[in-house]
Image (tube, rainbow, N blue to C red):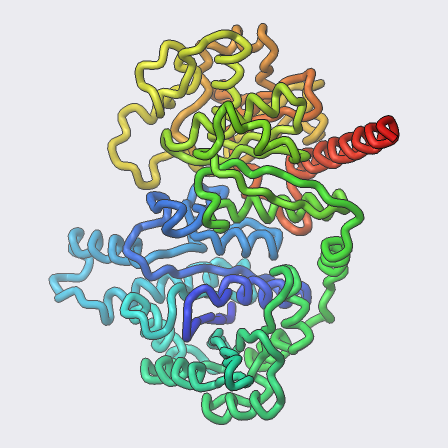
Length: 548
């Protein structure tokens, strides 16, 4: 029978509940337990698919096509296992289900209320993964902050489960903040006390309190928190700010978080933690042997969470190549023909990021043109791949009117067009081409060398595609379609052969990169950037020598 851990947050948002949940899951997994994590978000959207990246960060897509919260990316990167539709639930989805049941007459004419009908549906969803028999422990992260009106039904559902379950089958972990007042030169526990009191007023009593802090917690401070928050002193866990999120599992191991949890859940006979791969990864991450500078060309660069999975994939790939990957954010709206060379001349590689809409696309096209002509390693993802196709059509094939019908419905050469099955779609939510699809790669191509296989599967999130009407002409001109969907012929990968690294992909490889399995495309791209950096350094040295 599965056991359940609920992770709540207090005092302020953005404390890192997802990282704490993923770190605890990693520690339990390292001891041989089967663990999964799910996220319950309190907003009324059915899923984050229609949210602006500035509003909610990136939309993370699972193999089964769920558009989910970005925390699921952390879960997968830490646990090295896929999540699914069941791992992310929103208030909108809960209410949609309840209202549909009411319309179908499932409540037998009763007045439908938050309690018990909404909370019953929340509880059903919370227990769903545990009922599969695949997991020993289910960790559930509750989005939002204790005290938010939106979170109340979720907190109430946890209260009911805490009451219904045996004491050893359920644990509540509360993440809070211990702020440091510079003027007083001391850490203050009062916000944490108030946060726990708010949670207790709703009938939920935390078993473990994890304290985010900029300074170490003394034993006296831990005892004070334990006394006023009604937990044991060893259940007050220090979570000091870390240099990287990948340090957090080891910090939690030092604090004994996993042992406290195992004892509370009466789980005996567990193995010693095996974190050798994790520690090796972290060792290289902290002591790289070199550095590459990568330009990230996007239109949401002001918010790093908009490209969270891409940034993490770069970290994974950097470790494989034993180098630090320095990201230079370049807003595509600020790039034009007169300044593109100046903005990009110091880069070792260039990635053009995904996105939607016409804003900033001309800047992306200029960036692709520069990378192609300057032989700068180029990697385009989704819209980035589409911009590479448009740039090639305009500047190599001479089709000045080439464009995507997303931006110009009257383009003379619609080289990127709306997928046939998308043309009749009216509802925007959950209707894109979503989830994992197969791809057949041509032998002898750069993509084949990178993957080492003909058959791959990657995750998608798009409506527009390469227009196969023009495929033969692109191939004759030198832009090769090296990967296609074997079922419908959809172009998945384009590349230029006479270039150090020029690849565009319609899918999102960043979504499958993990600590233990860095994505091969990112690894190869950073390798190419590393070679470019070395070549540029040699050229500079030769110039200095010649001038001397």
